[in-house]
Length: 442
Picture 1 (tube, rainbow, N blue to C red):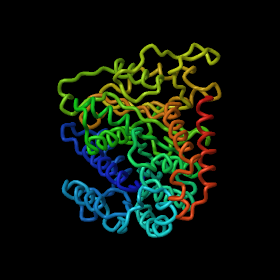
Picture 2: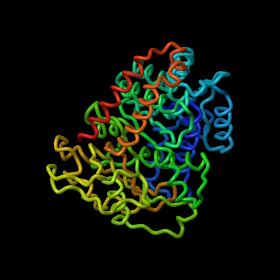
Picture 3: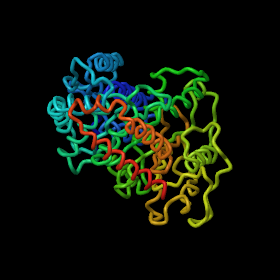
Picture 4: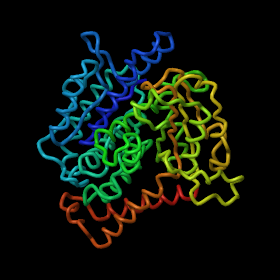
């Protein structure tokens, strides 16, 4: 089952480049012995994310790139070619000569109308190359104008054109300290609209990724390139092939069905351990009990960073018991283990019924997938893709900041001049306040 990736805006294209580089690197790990299991893994991953070049040799990403300016797309296409291992499909890049000015309304109403038709034609070409279409993965930032505005417009068009095909939007959440002055407006408008058309929304918070990156590099200042590499590593570790309990490959559609049991709950969070640099791998040794203990504590405390998490937080003894203020309840989780002896690791601690709402059936709360093949030269890797309460605090904060701006009518005219009605702000606030309420009351 193939996945067509949409790289939307500057951030989406830069993250997409790192993602395909990570996937290609994982497939071309020459340190692994040749085996039937390894070959099956490679074939499954190739079918999912790449197709082989017609001339033989090399791989072409199943991707469509969109940006309103040419520079970033040109750089990503050139960088991919340099590897001589994979490339982007020829002619599947759409760009214009003017950006969206960090304004959701400019991206959605001005650029979106001119962008959707040619982009949908490109997407159709990629879909026709798939033997079986498993879904769409849209990579986008919500701070600026192109990723958020154009990305939302393209996502809505995808839902209309492919109503029964899985769509997951990976949203890069802006820094809390502020990237652009309109980021809170752009974020709430994007998320509220995507909640109506997307099957699942994976939130990647820049603040968390920066902290992880600083810890890995042991440097206070990290580059966007470093951060994008961490995002790509986490995403690839969750989406690369793994076997479920029935010894079948876990498909992209399976992931969506298992993680979104109800349409009111679509927010996903991604956690990955160990969090170490490539340089430290040779001097590091891990065992499954230790790795899983840390990952479980990250889950129940609602954090994605190993360092400094609260070990005093425990799972309540019953649904009636008052939980610790920092406790984060989950709706559903997919735990993916990669590396030696992953199939015999004890994952029972993630099945505690008190970690989940009482209306979630026990056999639906947790899915465990394994792959004995190491991932990106990590001897053991554990990834948790989950639907839980963790994003609520950040979402609530952004909604509150955007509401305060709107109450003073700050910058509202920057949006209405592109044909957007003020009521669209009100509808977005109402939608997301309901989302926050739903998650808080799990």
